[in-house]
Image (cartoon, rainbow, N blue to C red; front, top):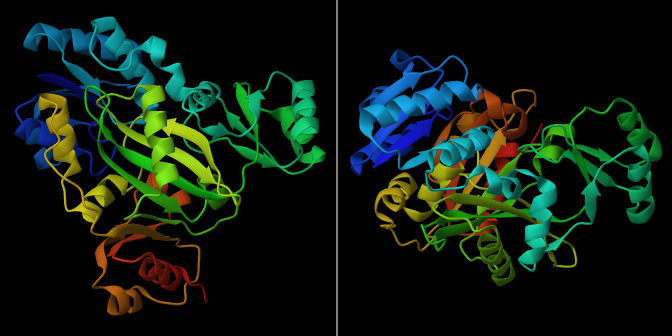
Length: 386
C-alpha cells in the first residue's frame, strides 16, 4: 500500500507512525516543509520518498506532489497526517484522487462545532444549548434565553483558540464591537468534570481500542486562569460514558481513525457532548495509551491501516497520568524531591514541545499508578506551589 503522510515532523513522537507503517510493509510517502536532512534517522529510514514543499497551506503544491507520487508509485491507498490543521487538505486530496477516508463533503461534521452538535443529538447524547452567531442582536437574544455565563468559540477550528467566556453584558458587548470576521458559535456554559473517550476504529468502524481520560480542567480555563494542567486515564470505564462514546463514534461514522471525544459530566451526573476530533489526542497522550496498557498503538494503527487487524488486547493495568509544571510558577518541591518520592511511578519526564507549553506547562511528568488515589496524591505533590 502507498500511504501519503503529511508533515511527518509535526509532532516529536509521530515519526513512529511512519516507522511502524514501514515495518509492517507499507510504502510511506512524506510531504512536508522541513528539510529532509533535519529528520531523525529512524524517520529517514521509514520514508520511501519525501517531497519538500514551500508551504503546506498551499493546496496546489500538495496536489502536484501527489500527482508525482502516482506517476512514480501507482495508486495512492491512503492519505493522513494526524494533524488537525491539515484535515481539510487530507479530505481534498482524498476527494480529488478518490482515496478511501473522510472526503470533503463529509468534513463539516468533524470541523464545525454546529454540525457536531447535531450528530451528538443523533447519537442520543445531550448537548449544551447553542447556535451560530449571526449578529449582535442574535447574541443578546441568546443570552436573554440562556443567561450567563456563555461561551463564544469559532465554529470551525481546533482546541480553545480564540474562545471566550462572558459573564456580563459589558464583557460580551465589548467583544461584539471588535470580534474577528470568522464565524462564531455560542453556547450556554456547562459546568462539570471534563472527560474524554479516546480510541481507534477499524475499517468497518468497530472500536478496537478505547480508554477514558479525566482532566483537571479545560484548556480554556488553563489558559485564561494560568492553572496547572493534569489528566489521567481510568482503569474502569464508567458505563454511561462508554455508552455515550460508542454511540457518538457510530453517529459520526468514524472508520480507520483515531478519535478523541470530549464530554462534561455535570454535577447532576449527566453526560453532555462537547466536541469530536478524528486524530490522536494532543501532547503525550498517544504514548500514554502505550504506558497504560503495555502496547504499541503506533504499530496497532499501522496494522489496522494495512491489514485491518489490531494485534493487542488491552487490560488497562495502570492509570496513566500527565502532570505539567510551568516555568512561571514557584513550586514547593524540586525535581529532585519528586524523583526521590515518586520516581518508582514515573515512566517519563522531560520538557514539553514549545507549541503546547501555554496549556500543558513547560515540563511534564508521566506516571503509572494502580489507584486513582495514588495518582491524585502525585498530582498534588508535583503541582504544589510555595
